[in-house]
Amino acid sequence: MVVGNFVFIERLGEDGVAAFSLACYCFPVVFSIGNAIVVSAQPLISFAHGVGNIQRMRHALRLAIVSALIVGALGILLMSAGAQVVTGLFLAPGCRAYDLALEGLPVFSLGFLFIALNLVAVGYLQSIERGRQAAVVTILRGYLLLIIAFVVLPPLFGVTGIWTAMPVAEALTCVYALFCLGKK
Image (cartoon, rainbow, N blue to C red):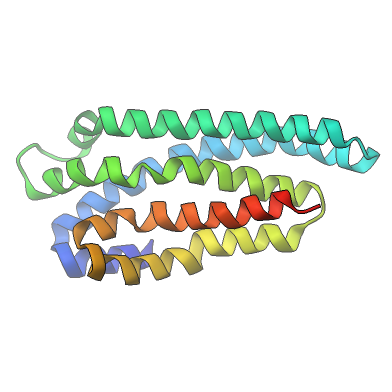
């Protein structure tokens, strides 16, 4: 997110950073709920893995994925439909930061679906003793792909590229995570 702050300030000034900060305030809510799903599923998956009960592992994973999809979809829906309310809690209507946030929050929120899924993937991989793959997913989503997206997307797509950096990084990470989940 430090790179995001630099990109926002470079391209949109202090108003851009204020708008981005608002998005960053909402991020932990989805992250926390996604993390709660993972923390709830991990003991079930780990125990089932330990006793070799593959069906129980898959069932717990499916429940976690469905829960993550619901949380992510609700986050997108609430942020898209309620962008004006959320933005109004932190910024005054009519100021440039308000307008930037109002435009960017629905785009930024598209990443919520992938955040929740990536967290489930990390938790599952840790529970079945595939810590290296879990670490790669974490590094991809939190650092590598996010930094690349913040560097590459804004020159190509302008302001929209800035707001889509996180969703694109999370989506690309999700592709890798799904590949890892598909491996035996």
